[in-house]
Amino acid sequence: MPAGRTRTPRNTLSPELIVRTALDLMEAQGNDAFSLRGLAAELGVGPMALYTYFRNKDDLYDAVRDHLMALVPGVPEDAPWPDQVRAVCRGLRRLMLQHPCLAQLLASRPLSGHETARVAEGLLGVLRSAGFDKETAARTHTTLFTYVLGATSWEIQMAAERGNPEGWRRLRTTMATLSPEEFPTVVELAPELSRTTGGDEQFDYGLDLLLAGLQQQVRTPS
Amino acid sequence: MPAGRTRTPRNTLSPELIVRTALDLMEAQGNDAFSLRGLAAELGVGPMALYTYFRNKDDLYDAVRDHLMALVPGVPEDAPWPDQVRAVCRGLRRLMLQHPCLAQLLASRPLSGHETARVAEGLLGVLRSAGFDKETAARTHTTLFTYVLGATSWEIQMAAERGNPEGWRRLRTTMATLSPEEFPTVVELAPELSRTTGGDEQFDYGLDLLLAGLQQQVRTPS
DNA sequence: ACCTGAACACCGTTCAAGT
DNA sequence: ACCTGAACACCGTTCAAGT
Image (tube, rainbow over all chains, first blue to last red; front, side, top):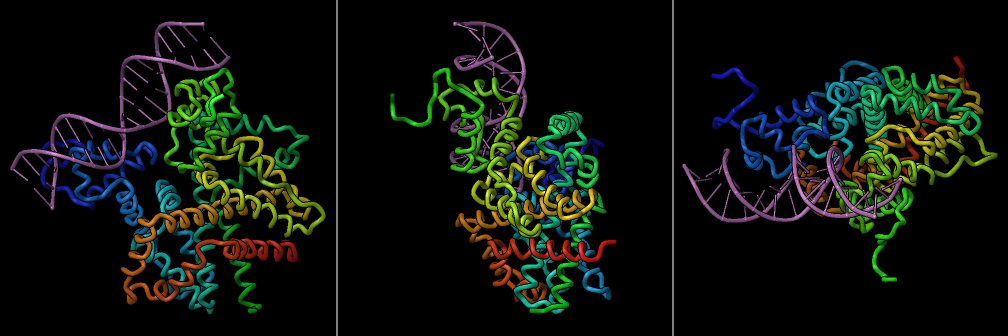
């Protein structure tokens, strides 16, 4: 048994192993650099071996997405519904930050997959129990989900841009180029804008705005 | 003068022409199918001709994004600030719906570009005039922007999935597969969820939640 | 400066074939 | 069923060269 990489030229290829290895590669070298040929090489098989388990690359992406969505924590019991909503949204955000590829996977292909439905089930259940009617519960779920998706995707992109030196230089250059006459507010608020492009505090700020709007709706039902 | 396609094997290649042609191709055949080689062919030049005007593909993407952001309408004057915020957010969403590639361009690469700054300037100016302090204005701007981005990207993805028959079949199959015991709420709210995956009403619902939270903040300053 | 042509190191996927 | 090997039709980008 050679102590090399995760290699299985044996007969032991499985959907689970492929998905886990694909996830490892995406996290290690970034989502864009991921390729079926690279994955096959990592597994020690030919590229076509993967097509026995997945119809194509998108099909594999869906499986990886669903695999990750299974890690979203469940709804905490015995808590006020706003706290339950907060917990689910924060859990999804945290998972996206831990696995940046999830952001791109969610943004590029719609739901499908039972694990995605599990997350929706949790959030919708909370909203229904809180007394929202069907339509409002559905609307609120979509709103919360798209907010988490948008806010966290943006946060990840900005963090990546700051991480690589080329991108950081580009950001500084763009800011320095803006004329204070044409863009007075942007220039004046540059420090604040830089500070609020991510982080727990920024995420909670937007989430609390949504929750404040919701609670107001509960108090004054139409 | 042959009445062929947009071809310029002449000496008349320019950044503007390249960007406009790239945009046309992205809208015609989708963002993923776009390639530098295809763009060069459409322009009647070799692939390397483009590298005189853009350093690489990402550089061209940035130019296309900035070109589109220039089309975001300005802030309407003489209106209450919530209406001004609504107008900017709706304008950005409308532009993303008209040019679906903009969603992916915004999601895949951070700001940079003067036209993006112009939009930020408009929104930040409104918020500052409404009396928000620097920090809150910046936080609110980020929140609104990421909400518009997330909600509209999701809407576009779902619309695309419904558009192609393969995707539509996949959506129906996923829904039909969910067991009512395991996912009671999702199954029960299937019609509502399907109805609230897009549209002006859904977008405004989330936007109004944010604005309600904001106005409450104005009334009760910390 | 502006553009070409050949070449490099890749892709996802099909197809026919092996076991 | 599970996997291989060769092939097809592509990519973005570099490099040397032309004008």
